[in-house]
Image (cartoon, rainbow, N blue to C red; front, side, top):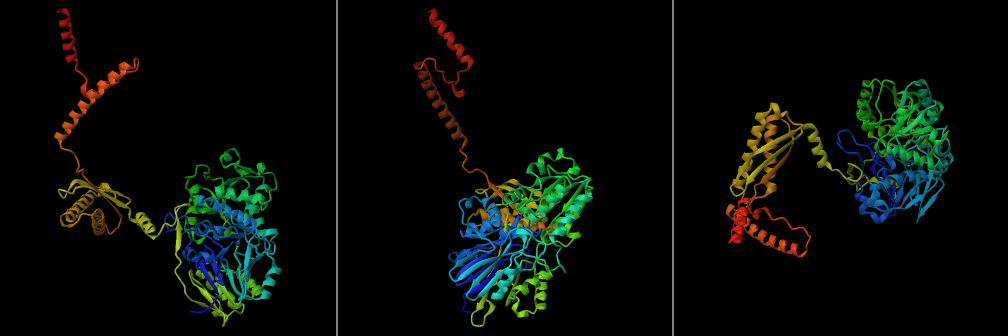
Length: 627
């Protein structure tokens, strides 16, 4: 093993789109760079999003210095609440990034008391012993994006975060080119560079051109209602939509809790500029019918700021507020992730079936918040790193980045196309990185905000349910007599059409009875789990032989009540109950007499005298009086 005090470990963001998280260890101190999530592929049924596996960090919790956030998108801050639930460590970021991060954390009641947030600026320097952490401004689709520099005795480790170069960027979107030059002059040991956008040739269109394009789209469709689907945290696109809505005389209806929170935060932080008063520009989604179509823009986004799934709901006619018509333009102002491309295709089809028009910004202009091919090569020329670690992208973009880096003069053996859990350690003598002591880093799949990791077993069952359905088989047994006393009832959902498969249902019930009889007649010791597992295996085998399908089998085996009392004893119990009731009734009558007007409790039905008996008693009393 190489004796070293510096290592780099990706926990996400490598060979995948999203879930950016990297750990740099310097002299036994771990610096976490971003804590993001990613959206699932379509085969992960019911999974809302995926976050990194934190087990390694939990095992080394005493070494973690803090989390350093580069910007406020979900792929950089979405996993932060789950990380903080495992590790209560300091969080560093710009003011706006931390404001968005606090929104994420506030949704988790267990973190209500967490308040270790540390605001930094691009000029901040935070010292941890011999290691200094500094920052530099970058251009992205959200304000106050920064890169991170870890300056150690071994050299500088630079993480760009998501970036691109745009000479028209202004204010908190502007790149600090002089700072990049200074970092490069000091010498960069390793560069972790965003390469998510390098697959597309050429350069991305600058944001001033996109602003013009959005306005042109609004202007050309002046007679239509416009529904804009966008990522909630893309503040730059949000500003462009606001500008165009105002210039074309439209009101904006915000649809989506995440988008409302981002707008509020951006307004409070002065990251959005309103050309008019808030009340004149915005309207409530519930009031959209009171606004003429040609005077309305609906800004739509969904859970965790991802708009495509909720847009599909609207296009399917299942939304309670928005229903598409022939007078609608759906403007998709985002680049869908690979995970949502199939959903996007189905959604577009549904939009067309409603007679609406649809325009996607991706198909018209090359718009991206990530580095283009030229941008990556510019960054490499600024930094002149000895080693390059491409991050934030699929393997195919890593391959492009590898080629682009070699074009700038880097040796191929100094470019590492890493995987999750790879641990690159620095040999201090040779000043080279070597791959050693790697470990497995699994995905943690989140189903709902607080349900935790779904797990592969649950996903497997969901996949089986979606493909082959479920069979519920219920039977009642008598353990003493060792037999089935109630014929099994077989119920299916999503498996077969019962009305045309009566014989299959009948035969499956027989297979269940045979298996139960076999178990009860041969088992040395009765065990419910063994019995149900045997039924499950028998029915699974039966259905596969008959249909070549494997539905989820849910066996339910019940037992008849073995503790019933004999009939004679029940009669004795009733007699005792009647006698006790008579005694209690006498006590109630006496107590009632003492209390005067208090109501007498009614006589229990079991001892009420019959009408004939009352007549005989009255007759007897009359005879005695006459005598």
